[in-house]
Length: 169
Length: 190
Image (tube, rainbow over all chains, first blue to last red; front, side):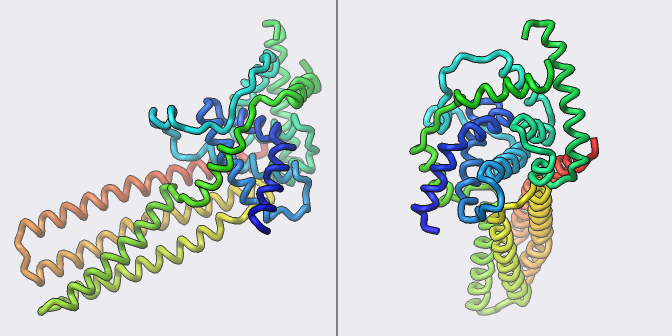
């Protein structure tokens, strides 16, 4: 595959599925610099993966798999230190869009951020509407194991949301 | 709130992306990354290869051209060249492995743990490698009847190198443990 073709496919994927990547980035990285760093890491892995894509799965599943695997490993990266000079000179990849914050969505992200790295992946796949079978394939665990995790996570989220209903969210 | 409502809230962000991407900056970073290798593993691997290769060759050349060549120095040069070759082969195997994309998160974590294991093993080996190198070096100096201060300074240098390589080894050990914890969390049935 030529570099031009690789770039064309990469750009198409990025344009069509950037929302998916943003959700994962926001669930795993909490500061602007970390989000930039993680997005860069995911993009590099997606770029490298283009020649390996064999259309055995959908692009969405492929991207989810790569982005989640990268994010999980990113959390174990050496502690991230950004020297103050790099903060000034750095070329940011992500620019936050000025959109009105939805309190309920902010709350949902907060809850996801509090989960451990593996449960976060399961929750994201669940919220995106993947089936148990697809989730089992992406995660590499049995459907019954996925089911057990989902039951617990759903219960936890519903309980917390009910508590928050009392606070007007 | 029921789960379906949470899902609706989640879906509400699909039409209003949180970020805009600076595509030029992204492509620049990807290209830079392709050219650069600045990760700690890369640096330490390349250092192991280059330092052992250069020092081994240097020691061999100096000893060969010396009027009174010592056996210990020849053994040390050969040892260093073998270590350099071993580090090179290990690096090629690791880089090949990095280019794989795994079907599942479990496979990917298994691979990451295997890679971390390799890093732990290699850093341990490089740390232990300091001991025979130091011994052969000191033996060579004793053969050449060097003065006591040079002897003490060399010993101090190797002690510092041994201590510093322990610090590097611990970074890899910590990373390996974190990955193993993640893998256990994924496999746990709860």
